[in-house]
Image (cartoon, rainbow, N blue to C red; front, top):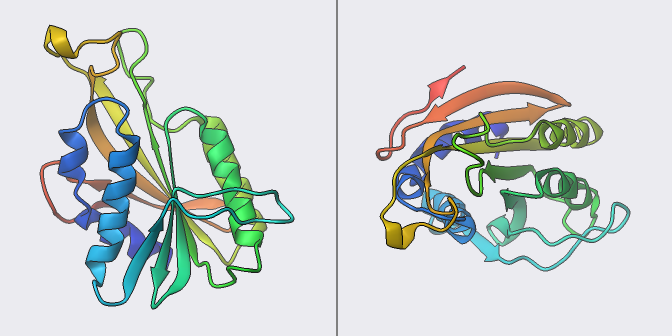
Length: 201
């Protein structure tokens, strides 16, 4: 699946679920992306949730999910809030492994695991992670990498839900960018209130 098509198709993901989920939400986000993939074609599409390790020359790594079409692995998902640069670098291992020669794209969802101090840090993705994505993309020009950012804002939560800010962050916006040949080429913003059309360039 081509990167621009992925950007447009992600508008159909259930981002309103992310908006109404509080805390780390790591497993929720993986499930949302798997749901997005399988829902596009319930006959041909499938996923390996908690994929086995692969990658040789670039080191071993195990993605959060492997996306398949007609039983062939074509995409790989990573979701991360804290160790973003490390997760971004793992795509090099996935793309270099000849046991999965048909991988076409990577999908990296980066989020703020919890808010620091009183405000969001401004964006979900760290600059180091984005630079790593660009580096991997440059080394593997035939592979597209789509980076999705879930930024959060602080909101008041009931006392029983409060735990040093862990549940205080609500998803404020969802943006995505396509990386190809080492550069960012297209951007989208998605509707948090239901399935809709993306906006962007």
